[in-house]
Amino acid sequence: WGDERSIGDVSPALKDRSFAFERRLVARLDIYNQREHSVLALHPWVTSQGRLHMINRDFFFKQTRLTLFGGSLSTKQVNGLTGLLDEWEKHHAARDDRWLAYALATAHHETDRTMQPIHEYGTRERFMKLYDISGVDPKRAKSMGNTKVGDGADYCGRGFVQLTWKNNYIRAGNEIGYPELVNNPDDAMKPEYARPILYDGMIGGWFTGKNLPDYFNPN
Image (cartoon, rainbow, N blue to C red; front, side):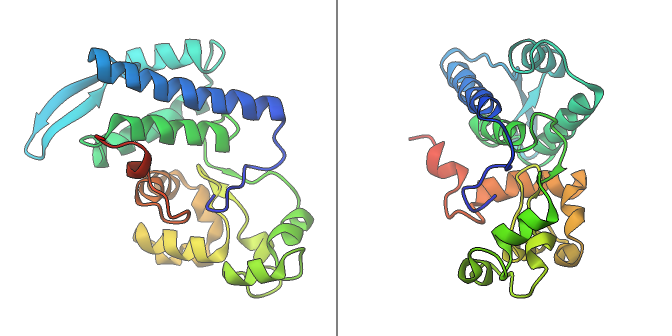
């Protein structure tokens, strides 16, 4: 993530289904804005922080199971989605519903529909070729912080968004309050770190220079 790269060895058919998921979920949120109903069943919830939106989980899972996951969800998929919804409600519930839709669609695509933070598909040799200073593009590797042999394999894609490159691990770790991430890159697959990296990274535009408010805003 951050380099306009997909998860790697994913079939074109799966990519097409994932992009279709993204379009459908965002479209459903557009319908919500027009009709005051949502596939996420977002209900107003007033707190000391203001007007928040809480999610009707029964309705959410019924709709996503039937329309976005082929009629069934595994326990791991349910657990992954539940964790992502919990994270959203805890930290972002007052924000634009469409941001949630886009983040969930991204996780759906980048995790190969598992809804669990995963390691990029491929071998060490492949990662060294793509991301290492000894690989096919040493200039780019160095510019992204992969300055020594072995960094390509150490800082390949992980998590809900396939966090890639050493510089991005450094930034993500600092942003979420876990600067040790750069020394423990596999921790990017731990849900407690992968979830804020997904949301905060996309909302803040950490790595691409484009953030969710650039695309989804009141205007």
